[in-house]
Length: 96
Image (cartoon, rainbow, N blue to C red):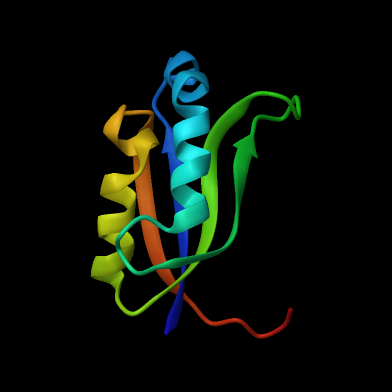
């Protein structure tokens, strides 16, 4: 299995959709969907005020980048078009 970092920045004005889909998103990441990935770490990105959610960050263990991309597409935030710019990168853990 390989580690990947997934960073998803919300589209402008998508906070209401994020809040509406929040429970479904949380339930989805608890299971890893049906894509065979394991969410190692996840949480919302916040604006400088420390309160407003502006995106999501994940460390995901998966067999392939394609599995991570399938996970992204199936996430309720993606389905509701909350996320705009999404990036996926392989990650080499050195510590922690």
